[in-house]
Length: 454
Image (cartoon, rainbow, N blue to C red):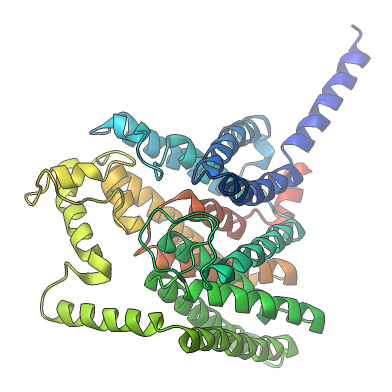
């Protein structure tokens, strides 16, 4: 084989790699995962199977993503970014936690529908890594457009659930009108819905055309209505944080860009969103007494907290947090092992054979601390802190309008769910979207990518 033929084959091979490991490929990976996971669950429920197909589909995306991300890092060194390192550190601490688990067999227990298999974690971090690669604001907008459509379609099912329609009986305790969509749990849906509320709020605020405003407004009404009707107070807390973050950031940007007509438009649109959200919440108060009952429960829990009883806080989350944190000093280096919160109950001084226990800490941060140890927790928190700082910096300083708006929306979604995560479980229903948002918020700037290719 002559040198010209070899050179031609190398060029073609390099071009093929550029396609398979390029921005568009990672954008397609994110969008395909976001669509196929809920779609597979919907189809499987129509045939009488819950929480089955979506888990297999997400596992497949974890495997595919692992190959894509590793190949991208190894074969395209010019495309490396500082944030890529978190893909490896997060996976390393997860696998160390698994290897040194107090009970590694619990990861594969067949009786649970909420196992967090190692491949799920790999899938989370692949979604994040893929988000890092999307330098083009246009591609990131495609992902957000996809999420708007998913939010709307899920919302239609959620609205039907508020009137008693269900594809299958829900396995966890819930009232007949609470929304859980395809997650089979109102808390799981509540966490996911915070991301959708942040997304649709941003869509309303940054709309410039009447047609876009109408579509965004309808999407926002559905998102807020379904989020509020989950009756998950973690969703309410996250939604409030989204609104506060958007309002405060708008005021800061208006002050920084005095006289810019765009920001006056954004502020006006913000109040339109607030009116839409108020309407969605108001409708719920009219048709249901559940919100008043949930607010009453919160008042009683705060009263108990004031009297020194923290166990009942957050529907007994205070008790679960205490059990988990009591276990931490014994396993502070690498934790009790992923998906092994049961170990904390076994070691508790309150443990009895028939004691009711949870597979989750019901707090993402405590769960990470207890299951992956101090160093895994610090690594995870470093990612969140750096993402927060750089997200703010990018919104303030980006000269590209599309890049700034996309980052701004992602930032509101990120902060909103990060607040809700204080009360939520860590499951792929939310994590696949959340980690993709973190990635897109930290995506490599386009001009930096251009330099690396030159």
